[in-house]
Image (cartoon, rainbow, N blue to C red; front, top):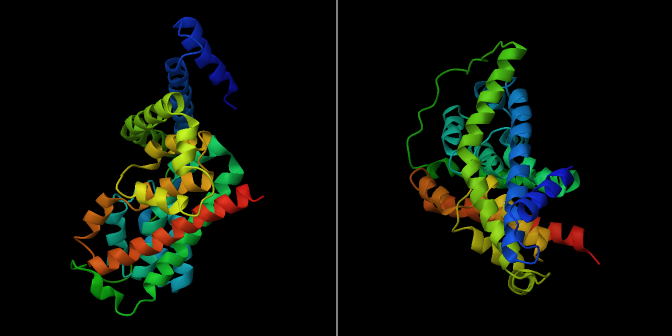
Length: 323
């Protein structure tokens, strides 16, 4: 799909700028230009399409629909809702509180909190552009399983509501089904404005992520990464998950690193586990949640999600690299 862009970036770096084909700088710069433009195109197009489709939904309607649902079906629906919400782990917390105000069971709200940063449209768009639809579909499926069963297990804990530290004022009465009537032109306008707003917020993250990836791509030997984080050793997946937790980034910032790490010898399952740890198990998220939830519940949440991420990493490596 992007062969034309790769050829154009090479022509610009090596012919227009006159940088040597043999140098590491040329390789890194060409990768930076190519990957940045490619990701920008994917983000704008796919976020616009998803944003346009999302104008047919609204948060209040979802809250109405989830209210009163049985636990397991509610976990499934909340996890699916996480796909169409453009939230990182920290920005999903306000809606998480809104769900609790709507008397939606806490296990269902946790399914949303787990799914939103893992399966948002930015991660899906970039994963599709970098690795194709099969890998993307497998990732979405496993991410949903983690969110569904993670929230279900949390919801089954007795007296789980007592671990919520702040008073959550319930919304009195039944939620109203809010209907929004927009023309196609208005929907397209809203989708474009939203896409532009999201792009403005994340383009620096993309450039930073691609920049780090370009440096790794051009200057760090493949043997170095393969030695310490490559291969199929059992400890590789938990090692990269532990490395990812102290970091904080959205999918736009970390996905370019996933691409480069796999090119340098890291198995895709390990690289995706690293990305999921960065986006769904960040320390900033834990610090925000500490003001809302008891430490025991936060630890349980991190433990369940961490186990799910490990499972995703091992399954990917097993399915894709089975001998």
